[in-house]
Length: 431
Image (cartoon, rainbow, N blue to C red):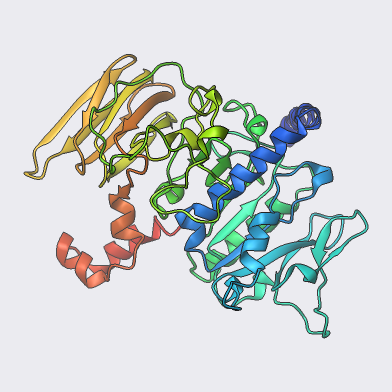
């Protein structure tokens, strides 16, 4: 058998696996309780609206949800971006929104700028999309011809996993578009946007279940009802992404004193649908609080509000690293569940402490100190960490230095190297 024949057989096997997964997930979504779907829609959109990476975005592309396809709802997000503010101004002045329009059946899709919900019309499949011209006959701005880069893509999908694999509905529209946009960004030397997918809890698969081809584009992060799951270094370093644990098999002993201000009541279960938030979410009325807010399979954001604690699940590929970083608002404790990790930290006196840990071993990182974890085993590794803050923050050292706007003059003098080397290092972090 020739190499071409082998590759064709492999691709056919991948496509077959994808068809099976699509069929199973579609059936699962179809049987999902409507009230649960509505609840997850609200939670996911509230998480996005409160996320620093969303608030700081100036130009973004977002999909228009279709209820018939059982996609995570985006109507609240679009409304927040496009609706007039109380003073009569528009968020549109702060955020420029592009939404998709399917051009043909050959995976060709464009993203056009809109300024109001009324700019959308139903296509032949009753899916809302923008016309190529506005009501005055003016051509809409195409994001591929825009003068400035996009900060954020909010993406749909049928299934996802924690390594960033995304399974679409089979048309190839988003993978084709994202690949073209990445090429455009590279050509113009733009920083790549964050690719963030929205997912119901039932759409997240076990790792390596979703097969991929060279044309599949991975996402940087997932937003599910359990919280934000950062996947790539770009997500970990961009605007303090926080990772929420999805499954609990044990509880870490937590610090006895919170790094956050003490609450003034027994609990403050988050009201995620509230329109305002100050240092967390407003409280639900006590009469609406149930046991499910405190006992769960997976982690909900509501019960953590103001409790001064948080937990992370960290998955390491073979050779994977959680790069040197610090948490300015919390100390950290962790336990290795699987694999072999080198864990180390450096004190303010530049003293280095480290140890190789295997399953069952725990570690502690004092607040604010630079630390890392490196998978030195032969296979994957898994660890859980806990913090004495519900928002510990994360300052990723290489990204702070080389993916920010610190002048080259500062870096060349700091590291005593020439500008060419600094530019080479910076080029590694532009994505």
